[in-house]
Image (cartoon, rainbow, N blue to C red; front, side):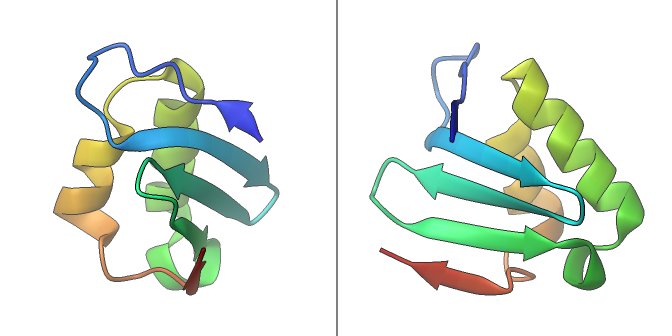
Length: 75
């Protein structure tokens, strides 16, 4: 997994892993969430990947747009 840069200093995201059709996100509470293109759509997935790499805005985007559209969550 890649460390999330958290440029705002306020994100709950610790790290992420990008695959062709999905992104896995580790939050600072120890929960992993897997989001796929099938659930969130291509435009949302592209935006999530861009924000993850940028290190800014991913947590807010998830909360506003795809919060409950995860495929799987685990610790």
